[in-house]
Image (cartoon, rainbow, N blue to C red; front, side):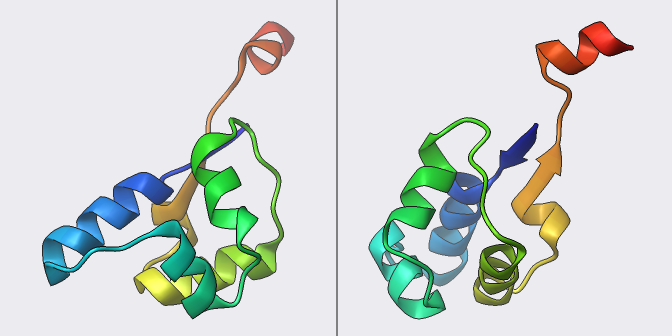
Amino acid sequence: MIRFYLQEMIAERKFKTGKKVTLEMIARETGVSKVTPSRISSQRGYNTTTDNIDKLCAYFECSAGQVMEHVADKSEELLV
């Protein structure tokens, strides 16, 4: 399963800039759908496109590995 670190990225950006960052602002400034940042930050295992990941990486000036990571879920652990 892919785990997203969007809330952590938002907190880090707020800390560095001293400015409020909202999911709506991220959607507007990146061009992703308004619901995408909300779903990424709240739905476990949310599936999005690489284009959206690319836009988030550009917005946060980071690598994909800082926005998300693969973590084994229970079904994957049973296969090992």
